[in-house]
Image 1 (tube, rainbow, N blue to C red):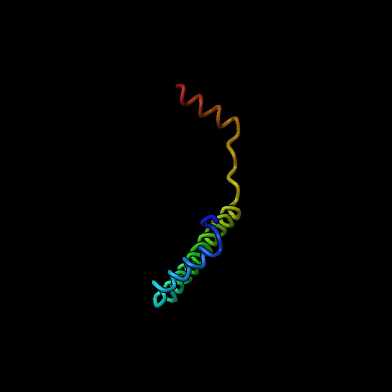
Image 2: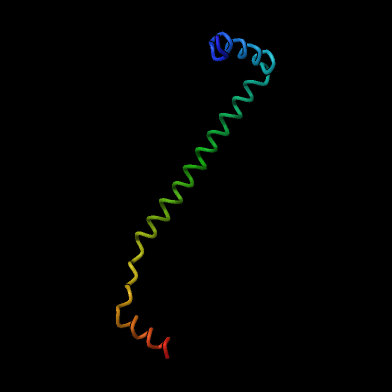
Length: 79
């Protein structure tokens, strides 16, 4: 029998219940609240990303400089 047998896990759970019995409900409640807060934070970040992407998509595209402007600016730099 290896350490992963169900009997071993039951013994470990029973000992943990004896040791942490009175604190276990409050520990699980705190753990649950922590998970809920984490999910709320994650949803907030996702909302922020979606808002940023929609703002970027709503902005008009900036016109690209034409080749004439590039050539003219290159001539100014060379002089």
